[in-house]
Amino acid sequence: MGTGQSYYIKTTALTTAQKLKKLESGSQTALKRTVSELKTRSNAQIKSAIQTRYGVNATAINKAKKRAGKGGKVGGSGIYVDGLSLPYQGNLLTLTHFSMSPRSRPKKPKPVTAKIKDGKTATFPSAFLGKANGTTLPFQRKGESRYPLEVVRTLSVPQMISNEQVAADIEERIAHLAEQRLEHHTKEIINSIK
Image (tube, rainbow, N blue to C red; front, side, top):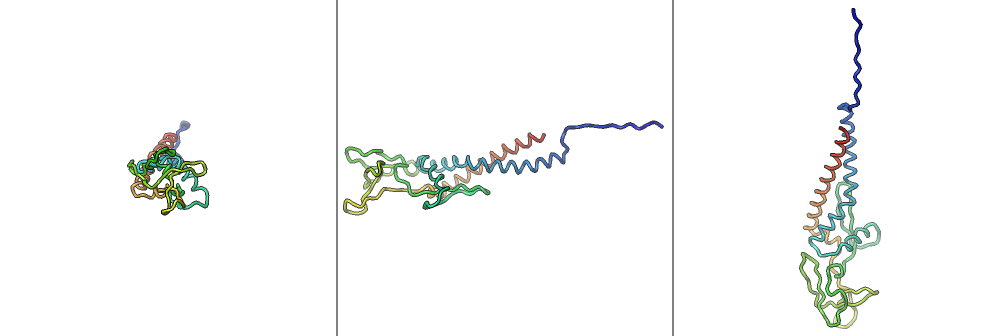
């Protein structure tokens, strides 16, 4: 009788079970990375959706996002996506945030206009420009007499977000962004397992 021979096969390739285990933990990583990216990238989508409908400048939207982190502000609304909360909080905005014209007090009386919604120009016949704390703002009289005055205000950013069309647009944009980023991170993990 002859002696038996032994064969040893050395491989560096992952077994199917190891690949599945890495894929399982990788899927959690892909989800975490996607949610993390949504925290930063969603703000741009929300800003675009608001500006599609309203003529508000980006500064007002950014300030409303920052204010949401602080306490003591009036009016709040936001977006909630699978464990991700994007709050916006703020007060009613003045016409200066909506392409107001004129920007400074004219020599001759001129009507104050602003592009608030859908790119249409709205005229405010009883408004006039004045300075408050060094800032030019649109004012109107509360009654028949010269005083008291009040600043002309329109919508707040939370009100804009809660508009049905804007909310639907935001939801669609964020869903598309989430799908895109999840697909990207999933491909990265699959490619790293091969």
